[in-house]
Image (cartoon, rainbow, N blue to C red; front, side, top):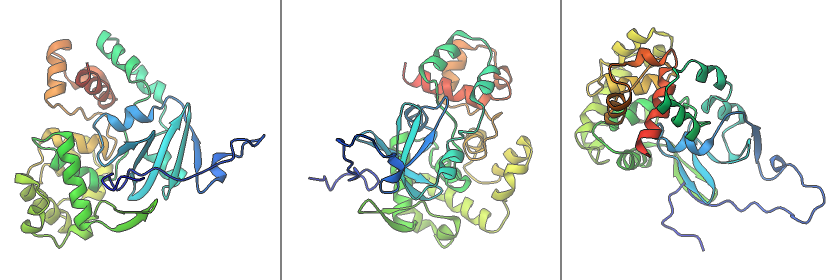
Length: 294
């Protein structure tokens, strides 16, 4: 019996195959399943490292959204097996599967802790998140923890996002800027965002008025993009660097929170982002995963 308290995006599918068949049909022929071959990719490391919210693992599969399209996905060796509305192109771009992973790793300095982090979290990739969802999520991350951020993002989605059905359950996509454009402070306060509601209200207003041009940030230099985001109340350099790294894949971004500050003090005294090279953001994510779990 299905537990009605399961999260809306965490329900097991009902795909059945004939295990006694002599020749197994490709999974992609069953009920919308698709397969993608991967190289140097680990789905669990990528989705559990704290860079993205609204993903849940249930009975071996991850449930979430890619570009507001619901998806169920799991990894078997070097294959990603998924069902849902996200296309193979959506999945490939979201997980940055086309990026030359080895070339990224080659740019890292030779350091014992970084090597240990690489060995333990090999296959972790930085996701290319939808910029508006990324911006809102990291505004909500201020003085917060991952569990509470997840709750806030889900509450925003439930109240303002588009309702849809996936695997027999009602779910809600993350709201678009247009869907949030009519919100006032009291509407946002009902989502229990705490002091962050005024920051989100400011972000919505400045994005709608084009005082901040979210769609142009990707083409800006890093410094100009940083300054553009800093126009929004509640966005400081750490939050802005998270948005630039995870929403725009500006890999020179090097967010420094309490965990990274700790690892820098302990293992890299006197070093800054420049020490880690042009893919410093990737090095940061490996170190973040390592220091939080060791």
